[in-house]
Image (tube, rainbow, N blue to C red; front, top):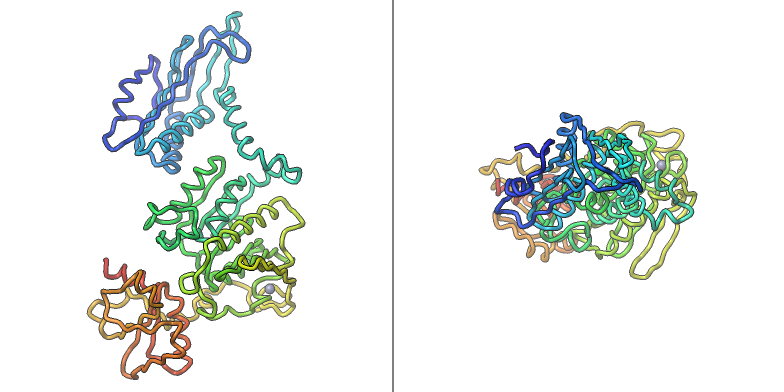
Length: 508
Ligand SMILES: [Zn+2]
């Protein structure tokens, strides 16, 4: 069955509706476009439609796919009539089925708006006075309505004198890459999409966990277990259909970072680990891209904007990548849900200022704010003459992958261990007791040695054994393993990706 077709006879809506019927669908929405007896104050007698069929079919297919990506729909059908049509005849019909009414309504609306503006269909209007005019459907009044809807969407910010229509156009033309769609990313993305940033790239590889939801407000409980990138893209597209969302479902690393950032004008760092922050910092300096970066810890956060040539960089503050574990992650240190939300919005605000070329962007300072006390500090941020990256005589002149996972020789990927070999290791769970309650590891015999108590409760490592340390994500285990190696206990290893990797391993 063709999803889109042209017909020279009247449209049989009864039959089309039956064709769409599906027991799994709870909703059906349709739209009918009729020939009316006037157009812009002129009396219309009848119409003639002409179309380029092949192009219509392929463009309609594209539109249906776009609708499927944005809305959770099951099926779609559209018929457009061509040839001679009389007043009150049906010119176009769209039908959509979905599990729920909201998706059916929205998709139906989206499809008819796009069909009207994008398909190569022309109509000749025959007026009562005897003359006639060819009209491209894209120029008719419905298209004007679609356009003015977009203007209306932004109307509360375009009345600001420092934005206006020209500022809105700059936002629409802008290309921003958001790395990480977690706590910071959720709110940064929502704000950028709402503001009308026209091309938003999202780089994210993680799946949604229920413990993410208190701070990642882009998602809902029914999304748990699904890839965040798909969820984020469809939510944002539903929030603002006038922008383009580009998905990069991958983990950012030294191999792909330059390719990823190259397509964008501004980079928004919403990640939560040092190695990625330094990798983004280094690539942005080397490729002359502005970078807006935020970090959060328990109740306080900081934000800074690095402009090429003007603001210094992260290595002006810390020349070397700090060791993993020297600052806790959200998993172990905890975080109040409003903190990443606030700083994500601040990042989006900074990006909007950069796009609008506002002098007030935070390019010379780091802003620190504690949400508990509302104490804020603005620290001067200058280019350090001895910076290994952005000074006049840099030591770092290109991205060398080895510099961004320098500890990999003490990490072990569980997939590389055969099941029969597992008992050659003594497994040590470094997680805190509360984490063990939420995600118990029953598949493996292991001992508990909490990360927070490791300095006070020493562990007796036996020299002829091999120890594999694990935590939730592999960050604390790496830090602890590195410490042990420095103390000369070299028969210890860190398990990559922590408990997630263990669960996955025993599932497969
Ligand atoms: Zn620097």
